[in-house]
Length: 416
Image (cartoon, helix red, strand yellow):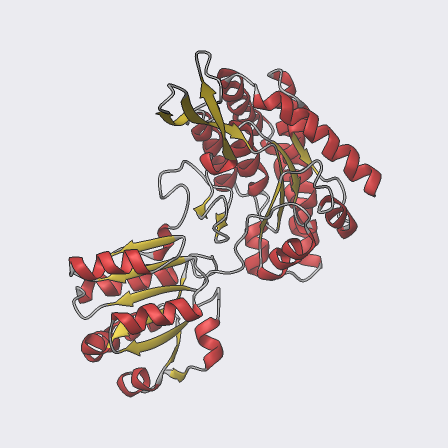
């Protein structure tokens, strides 16, 4: 197994050297060709995905997991559209991000370059195969993809289509590779190959991410979980606050940027919580609240200490009444995961203070936590969300798949 993974990683390293100097037009052409190839191979994609869905049903996977696995016509269309959208984004490679002149006339700057070889380990959704490959190629990288065993046939089919398109456009096939085994030993071997793989990005549940972080010898861009908060301030517009809370919790509860804890200022709790609780319950949300919350919403279940740390990924919400914004920020600091936090307020000073003092990858004012997404924030797409701060913090788009090197332009300067 090790020899096989080393061979794959070495091939990726060789491809990364070629991708780093690939012409922008060539990369764009390859992405457009990939989109066309997915359209042409819809039948093959559907057949491979049917195998995975059928096997998932036999293994007893939940309906939610099977839904994430299924490549419907809509999902395939989104993958095709995503490829075409990424193709049209500006190429970050070679961009000069800063330039300054030293007293001796030496001009110093920073230039964007690819990260190199990126490993991505992910679960369930086979569309990640296409999304991740698109972003890595656009940023001039090579990528090794290791999807979950439940999507093996889908991932192999998609990667094969992408590789063929790369070859047709004169780019190295080794720049997009999918691990061709479901053996978990392959993952362990990949995580040891720091001489070939520059960074590892895990996408999936907390157990997977911790496994990768604990075993990888190369840097890992990760987030363990999304314990996201909405704080409804005393000076919030109640109608706006209710709609934001509903969207943040119920629009898609099983994702990392869904609200898990609602914090409400004591001065507005009595008037706001009954209506908000009723609206949330109509959507099937189970409420677990502090003592003050339960005095206002009597049939709310009691919250335990564990609830404040919980990432439910379900229609369950913890609710706490706080005495002021300072207590709200303190709660977020103690129990949050530095993922996404929002404040609802009409007070500019409070909004500004919340933005400054809350240290999460996205902090919002008067908007839903569901906006922590690369596409929603205008990055075109994302490869994941990082809460590790080093290198990237928040959604990782094309720029986050590059780094910078220093350059210096002189006219004969010598150091004395």
